[in-house]
Length: 178
Image 1 (cartoon, helix red, strand yellow):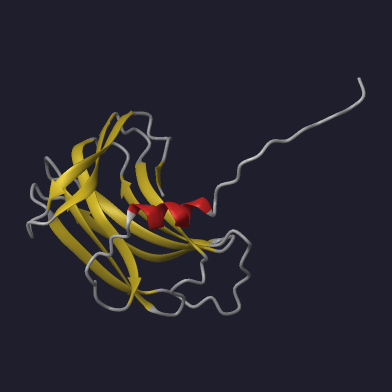
Image 2: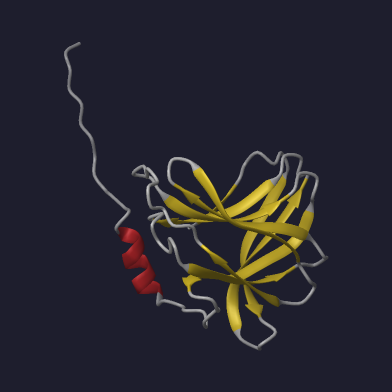
């Protein structure tokens, strides 16, 4: 599940697109355009259980492209109730699809007090004042190990089943004296 910040003060357009990577493979991508980025902008996802990958080498890989060269930062954090910076690096889009890979050590959480809402956050960040048009990301993958492996695409029905564990349906009834 991907989300974006709302404090940028500009006009954001996002759309899912079909993309042909430089390898010739066809995949889905998200295309973002932001005009009036006064407060900075983040496009991010969380990975449940902050203990995932702790004390191990991890690799983040993704494909990026822009209609113009646009600078952005990639930040990875562990959130334990406090925020621990795991990885931060600046990149620029190219006008052609480019695969980006970065490996880093995820800190151990021994002797760290973890709240019940711990998670890993992967964030693509654009500085305040950076307007951009047609920045695209595809095949974002964070995994254990020192090298990127081929992207794993799960079937739609399996992805839906995995998401349903977060969904609840029902109603609440209240009664009282009036």
